Length: 182
Image (cartoon, rainbow, N blue to C red; front, side, top):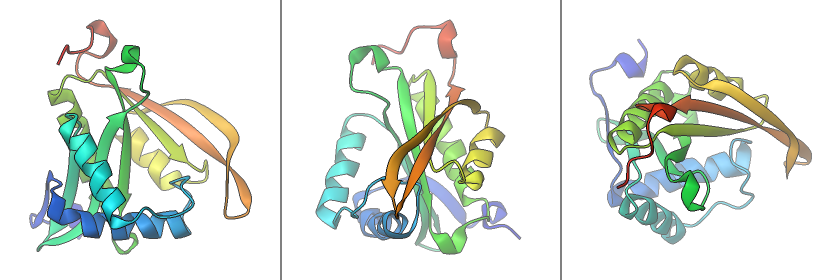
């Protein structure tokens, strides 16, 4: 049975006490993966600062847990800093590698979409590291994201050039309404 169908898996707001586990998952992703284009994992104080900054600015930051163990996390942040982009968010989803392929990412991304809609955002953009990251591309497509483009060879990591895949999904009223003024 997939963990995502396990009623013991809960998705909730990620709190400060979750950040050590978030930092461990992200550090492994930075060191061994291609989803993040960071080269050195941020330390715990930096991860705490990033979390607090997003939450204080009103962006959703979620954690998936089972029996108190953090399985993964997801958050939305500003797509770009300029004010005209205020209705658009960029998402990030990271799952403990031992939990890949069990539906945790789908639960997190689905929850993140709902939380971003509740906050009045109108578009969500996924900037997926590595065009070979088919699991992430398929996850986003399954939850309504459309292919928006590929930026070829824009990142150098693990001794090779990597692409980024851009995918986009409307939230709430999408482009049929202005962004929420909050």
